[in-house]
Image (tube, rainbow, N blue to C red; front, side, top):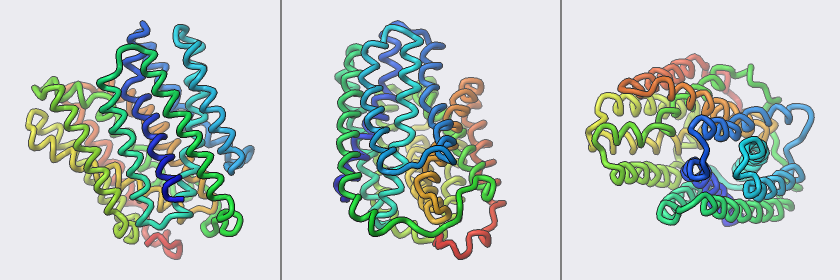
Length: 369
């Protein structure tokens, strides 16, 4: 089962690599303006935020729904081909793609936490980082036209669907015998400081995901060196995912606070020393905390808190990476300049301060240690 879940992570995050890194360039090659590209790429994170609300009462995230989402994801990626040259059909396909992809990962995350131990989970999840990095390095050399990006997007999506089906088939017997239990009914308001911190944390990443390359090259760092900075961050992420197991048996609320504080320090370093390669590499090393350990601690904490495990993962991805990523991208565009990462520092520090208001005593008896 470890291999099946790892394969899903490998191909799923290869999709993300193609979509985030190369799809914007493919759209530019196809003749779309910057404004049109921004609208098209905002569709997926927006759907990632909206779709979880359908699962509160109307739909249940189970094996059947997951399988349907894989089929819709496969269909949507094929529809990119005929829709590529027309804005409105392409926007509709992006909305469909975003809706389908918002369902698939939460189901597997919940299954992984159910089936694998906390020590093994990170070692499975690191395959996602490997998939992201490999597709970035490979397609960076191979991309010559928009169809190249679509071909790789289609291939990684079909492989994701096949590996997702293998996860469902392999976990069926276990899930029938060992259904997830424990926790309380899902509610965002019950732990609102935690959820608000999730949102602000990802808002603070807007400047990094959208402008880091532009920011560093504007301060004299070469494009090639900047690509190594990206790769170094992913390598640190992989190392943390491999060794993080013991940390996930600590107080998870404390782990979250440390990682959010480290993120605010990371943005402050990028603001203070934008042209220092040594400090920038150090800032990138903090990706091990601000992404890898943070993400693992967050989804593990939610898994222990709520009875509806997959629904909690859906809302985490929707509120943080969905709505937070959407707002963060917009704000980063407004803040871009010398003080971009100073603004991101204040946003991340606000996430840390809000997280301090969440009382540890409210988590007592919920096995968050």
